[in-house]
Length: 143
Image (cartoon, rainbow, N blue to C red; front, side):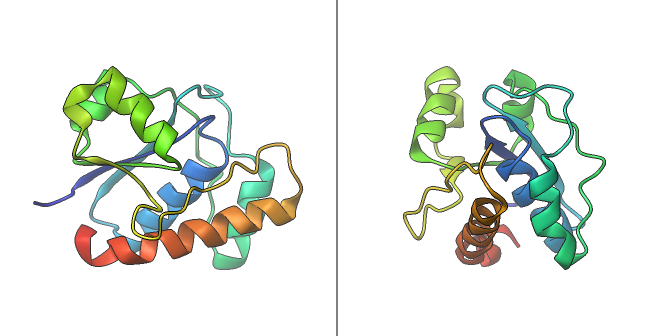
């Protein structure tokens, strides 16, 4: 099964999901990667602190615009990444056809990615590191 369309989800779509989206786009330039929020801050750019923790890795997220998850996005996705079991459950309850293709990014290391929103920069760095670590076991599965 090829995962050519990947959807990344968090709550507001301005902190965690843009980080994972940017990392996936960098690693898989030939795949279509999008992100959305369960209650997105629609139209907003990425949180400045999220950008700050990605700048040392030459990743620019300035073109990111937050959007709300919807039926069209989940239908198109071959794989949906969330930040927690609760978010996975939320998606599967609304769209039962997403069962089996929706996983928290920390599935293999049983880790939720804590939301750094409105916290200090250090917590954004923790979220970035947790996302990077959680992504590693997926790499051979996505390729």
